[in-house]
Length: 76
Image (cartoon, rainbow, N blue to C red; front, side):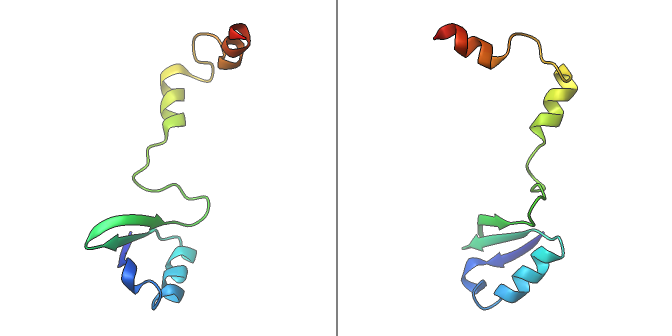
């Protein structure tokens, strides 16, 4: 992942867009602390877990219990 100070983004915007177009993520920092992350459309950030895959690994395609919509309808 590329890292860039947020203060330098305006001067390097074309370069940042080039990195993103090439598939790289860009982390923006202020005072060496992360404040934002830019990533190509459709690409999941590296640090974000895939919760859906984890849930399917635990419960399969049909989790136990009743559907949330069924519970909501019953509560009305």
